[in-house]
Length: 261
Image (tube, rainbow, N blue to C red; front, side, top):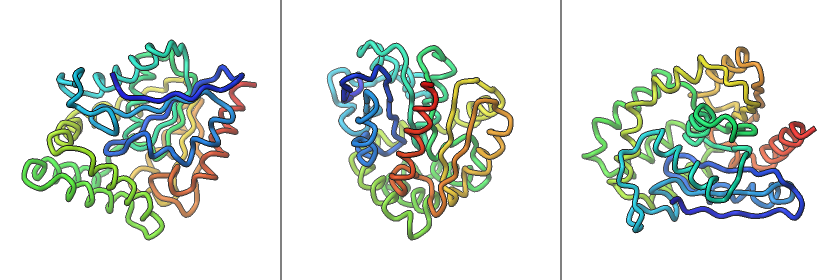
């Protein structure tokens, strides 16, 4: 089972589950924890091969890495904690996992907060993926990861986000990186399905104005998905929770509170 940590609230029955992106870990939510703990029960988890969910544990993840199998990892944790329903907050690739979980287990998802959401790979993104496929077994994965991080988060004010993700990615193994990278083979049809299917679960997209690769698609999606909203953070790139934590926390907590009314 994935490594995870819970923080119980004295009175609230509402749960918020945080799902990080590829190469990260639950530590990327350190700027959220204090504020969210005041209002909700919190579940922080490390995806397989990340953080403290290392593949050399005795219950190592030996099956093929697919979005479905990684989604099931998350479901096992909320089952183990007897959490019937939870709000999910994700960043980057974590938003794909949350959306996949909502498709398969809609009754377990109270709402989705999608930070730096990935719902389509544009031409530039697809070129990056193809380069990764070509070089993933030749070039040290950290070189590739630094390159990807710079393309996705290019500006000077994105430096903290880049540094954080590269620092976390250093804890991965080359073999683990390759396992995760192979997920790209199934990403396009999955995202195409998500864009076309209005799941009708309350969804808040929190996107940086400078998230050039992914924001345009989200702007189109919210026009067609009836219970979706978009909050755009100015002077901010892909990793909104790290770059603009005060705005992110205030916006998301206010949104979740509005759903309880």
